[in-house]
Length: 86
Image 1 (cartoon, rainbow, N blue to C red):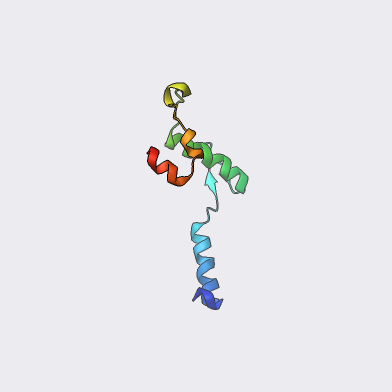
Image 2 (cartoon, rainbow, N blue to C red; image 1 turned 90 degrees about the vertical axis):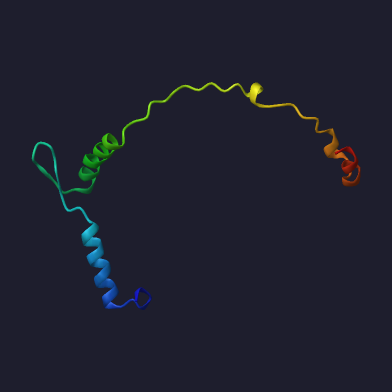
């Protein structure tokens, strides 16, 4: 029914928005927060604390040990000549 742009669709969208909207949060000191930026500043550290922080471990990659040398001279040959080499 959303394609019809009906009043029922708008009513349901409004209800959905109101159910998903956080009107206010209460800070640890007991004060209420209603501004979006203040709520975001309060929620971010809480989620960050719950999810935890990863500790970066320094990894050293030695590309010379990972890469190997290949003879690529045969790539310039015609396709029919290349089959004989492989």
